[in-house]
Amino acid sequence: MEDKTRAMATSDDAIGIFDSGVGGLTVLHALLEALPQEDLVYLGDTGRYPYGTKSAETVTRYSIENVDFLIAKGIKLLVVACNTASSVALGALAVRYPVPVVGVIEPGARAAAARTRNGRVGVIGTEATIASGAYTTALRAVKPGLEIYTRPCPLLVALAEEGWVEGPIPQSVVETYLATLQKSGIDTLVLGCTHYPLLKPVIGGVMGDSAEETARAVAELLAARGLARGRGPGSTSFFVTDVPDRFIRIGQRFLGARLESAVRLER
Ligand code: DGL
Image 1 (tube, rainbow, N blue to C red):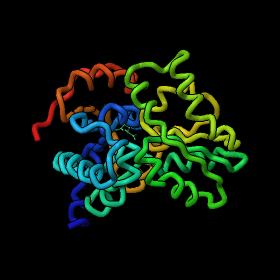
Image 2 (image 1 turned 45 degrees about the horizontal axis):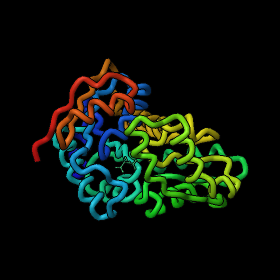
Image 3 (image 1 turned 135 degrees about the vertical axis):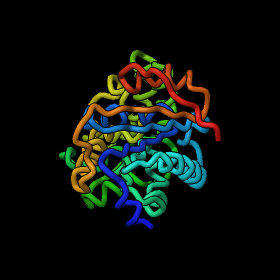
């Protein structure tokens, strides 16, 4: 069945992307920049956000339901644009579905491993991402000798959604979270959560941003499989699992562009 469906995927099919809500729009932004000719279908599981505080089992179940929806749209490739879902569900998704699956962990780990000079890398993410150890595994797979220091930073998600990304309050929250990592002498920090790039002004320093690296991985994979769409411009459609108002309002900041509308899924 796998080969048959793969054979049926064509370069004109869309790329499917999902996240727990607005966060994956930072990845979508990078995909739009890198692959403007592609059609993109984005699903934000806003009805069940956040994923970062939930168990691996629950996030995997949600992820499967999200991908069932995207697969029914006839996608040629899946992007798991959520660090938490990529950390805990990528393996389950990759064996379950007949399309290539790209997560955000491995590209982010590759970028950080290439960037560090002293071999000490920090990783910040949601509680579930850090607890999974997925970044540590991915970083060690690229460079076994790395020293890796991790820290869950759950408040940063709320700050990013609230738009509190500059000034004394986020500054002090970030300093408190990062103090121990900085004492460890890290020279590179992996922003292991979709929301953290918005806080770059207060995080500062050398950072690995997995969104751009993920878009590059998608472009390479499409080219290698002969699935890149030759002509454009592509279209983007948005789906959510709760009323779309908040997704549209907050999502524009994550996308860095106007978000006209999103369709609510009835489940
Ligand atoms: N998108 C999630 C991530 O990158 C952050 C938000 C959430 O907890 O659902 O881990």
